[in-house]
Amino acid sequence: MPANSSRSFGPAPIRADEFGSLRSHACTEEHVVLTAIIVVLQILASIALIFLILMHSGKGGGLSDMFGGSVGSAAAGSTVVEKNLDRITVVVAVIFAFANIILLLRLQ
Image (cartoon, rainbow, N blue to C red; front, side, top):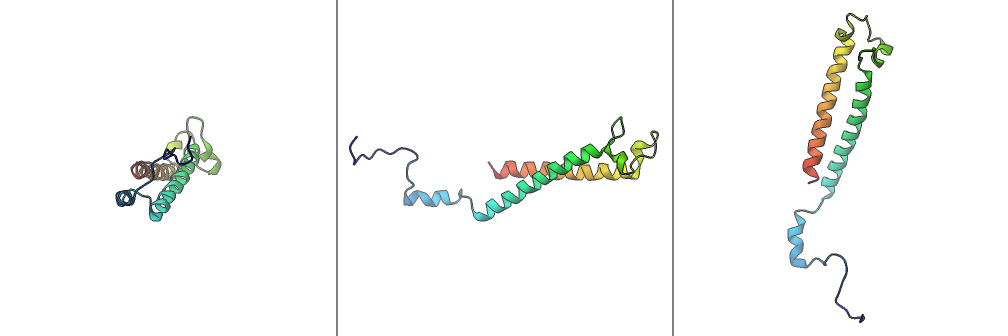
């Protein structure tokens, strides 16, 4: 192969007149920082969801009994602790769902 070959491997170089059209699709620093913040929020929400779901009492009592959530087997699901745990879990689940939707739209 000659030394002056115009053959190149990989993507074609960007010409100056094409650069303006790519500018609107280029990632700005603000876009990257905001996406990173949303990813961190999603990771924290997923860890919180795991913890909160494990705290719920199932048929056997759950981890919430260790922290005073159990009054008895008849009223185990209606305690104030269980109600607040349910509310917090729903809020964190909504945050997790919105973070997923926002990341899906931002990374398309």
